Amino acid sequence: MNRTVNRFLSLFLALSLLALMLPCMAGAEEEMHVVILATSDMHGNVFSYSYEDNTESTNNGMARLYTYIQQVRAENPNVFLVDAGDDIQGTIMTDDIANNVPDNEHPVIAAMNYMGYDAMTLGNHEFNWGIETMKKILGQANFPVLGANVLDAQGNYVTGHGWTIVERGGVRLAVIGVCTPDIPIWDGSKEGIDETTFEAGNVAVKKAIAEIGDQADIILVSAHMGQYAEFDEDNGSDAGQKIVEDNPEVDILQVAHMHITVNDRIGETPIVGVRNSGREIARIDVTLDADKNIKSIETQIVDMADYEPSQEIRDIPVVKELHEQTINFVQGVGEDGEQGDPLGTTTARFQPEDEIPGLPEGKLQDTAVMDLILNIQLINSGADVTACALFKDTSDLPEGPITYGNIFDIYKFDNTLYTLDVTGKELKNYMEWAAECYNQWVPGDINISFDPEYPGYLYDMFAGVDYEINLSKPKGERIENLLFHGEPLQDDQVLKLAVNNYRYSSGLKAKNLVEGKRDWESSNSIRDMIVDYFAEHSPVEPAVDNNWRITGVDLSKEDPRREEIIGYIREGLLPTPYDRSYNLAEYDELVAQAEANRAQGITEETHESH
Picture 1 (cartoon, rainbow, N blue to C red):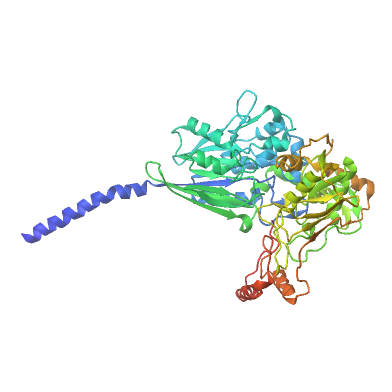
Picture 2: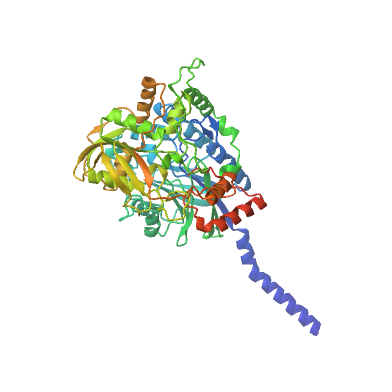
């Protein structure tokens, strides 16, 4: 009798336990997993190719991105693909060929259609050719192009869409697209910009969320702006952080525009961002329960260095055709296939060799590359003084024939030239702002390094004045011995300054460095001025006037320990000290680190792009 009772009780307990577990088991079975892949700032790099160098790239491009995207889709059919803008500008293929014929099929949009994008957000560079050209190009997309904060004169979305909802695997993803409202700062003179309203990102997102209501299971904001304010530090109209702070309904924030890796959180909200030119992709894995409530969100940034370019993307007819056309254009080959004359010639290279691999001498001393550009700006503007940045650390002109690719390499943007009147005090303040790109030197440092918060394109060098940059001094106190025509520049002395349109807007005006307004704009681009100069002055000899130099540093060049440390960098056993300085006080630790790396066979990529 007792055995029967015990068996009955055991069976009863087992059935009761099973009844309790069944809902959990069912819930686990009904759990859903979707993947969101997010790109941005692809800047026209469809083919995974460097046209200015006429070489295959090794770690970027839309063709590589597609290889990874297809891999993820093979693992999980429920994949969303979104982009945060700055895609139709940035290469010779886009800027000098495709965008000049906007009615023709565009290679970037053709590739994005093939890749199966669900949505794209406007970036600031989409506006570089004016509203109508932008709309013609983006109108070719098979997916909505989003601009929730960009309204036309009638108050309608310029692209027709501010947000969209995409369903995959039963999960509804709402994508809200907003771009930086600072576009009038850079492109205010372009067609249609003055008739367009750019609202604050956080305000536009709030309106979109209200419109979306309960239609979505996941809300993603795809923002073409940085995590932190670029100009509007008081109100945060151009800050991704402000979007999340004011809109707690946002589940995921994608940022862009700054060309940096972001894998962060504001509270519980994940934030992702990738480097430019298709170098990285953000992967967001979202798990939802049976009721489609978000259980977890995991994020990672995937580098494209280990992926091969997709031949499918390269074989898209318009991509293949314009790729070949661009190579011929760069190399000066005509439509008849015959090699044309070069744009000009040089007598020698224009950049010195880097003493420390990866530390650009072009930003540590006056060079022929910068003096060439600055001299051309002075000639074309008639200004007293001018300024420009070395946009790429490795920009150089080779000895011999010069092609359009060489010109693009030293001046990749399609800027025009402005002039305005400035006082001596304003000019010095501008120069101090430019010199903030350097870290302060301290005794024992064996190299000069750069503040990572200041991208290289913000560091201007000047011609028409002589000056010194004392790096033993803090930011704001570095410009010394500032001379104009050999005499100390007076605070109230008025000079004519020439700068490109971008620097005028995003630097001089946005930072309140000058009061004067532009009084002249060139009818042609600075890049065209360089082309014209080579046509008229070839062969061009590299010349350096050494009108500026860095002072206040002692790099211990006579100390053998310094050369030993540099030797380790050259071997790849120590990373390039780009954003920090190696100090002799840490000599023993550096040697130990390098030798440990040698023993383990570890080497660094000393020529990483900064």
